[in-house]
Amino acid sequence: MIVRNCSGGVVFNKGKVFLLKNDKNEWVLPKGVIRSGELPHEVATNRVKDETGLESKILAYAGKTSYEFYSLSRQNPVCNHISWYIMESASEDFDVSKDDGFMEGGFFPIEESLNRITYSQDKSLVNISYKKYCSL
Image (spheres, helix red, strand yellow):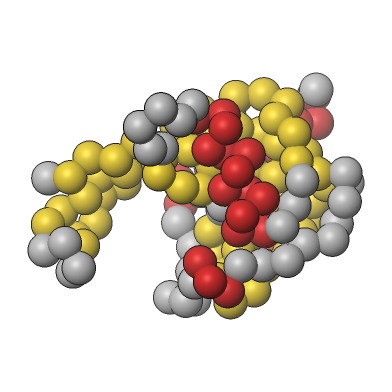
């Protein structure tokens, strides 16, 4: 099994959270693989910028999630361990990266985002992160 360490951001603006819709019609959060020599918080900030066009700052650590899938291209199972950060963007102006396989994105109110998000772990992460964000 291939094990990858990743990092991503739960990005808020004015009480809304940013979601991306990928080419599989899944609503997800911005994230990426941590390469050798990179730090998790740097990867989170960079992936948010690359995938959404948003400049954002880290406010707090949000937690970790993990999931497994079978990679057809690698012909191997893959396990992703993701470190998440609560982030904030001062701007609502975004530019979804079509080059990274995203079809659309945007800031959504929490209830709407929880209905859109595809994976239950991400729903829980956003719910917990929102409560923490409101207390910061």
